[in-house]
Image 1 (cartoon, rainbow, N blue to C red):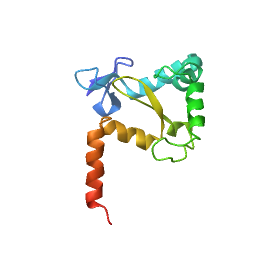
Image 2: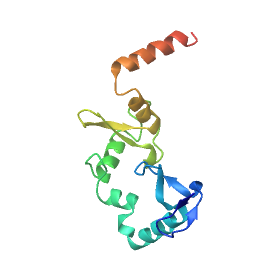
Image 3: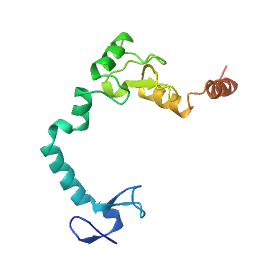
Image 4: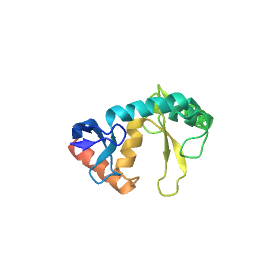
Length: 138
């Protein structure tokens, strides 16, 4: 059991969101109070909603929303690796080098995650390629 910092009601631990910021691993405010606060904040600050703000300003790679759309268009709306059609903007990921922060292109979500999981390492990717060749049907 834990007492909510907003409503001061003792509630079961399942009534709290997880939070790495607190020692007990749970948010200090219960889910119900957090939802009420979040909903009110969004009503009071419509211009600060994440998607609206990002489109109006820039994303975390220092490019404008229009820059990203231009990059997608320059790649014929296809992933630079698998050439899958990027049907939605959500599928279009800005790929960048984690070391230099240089933007490389636009990838589909799967290819972007794959490169990230392989830590941008050509050696690991070559090893994975050799592994697949060894076990693929001829």
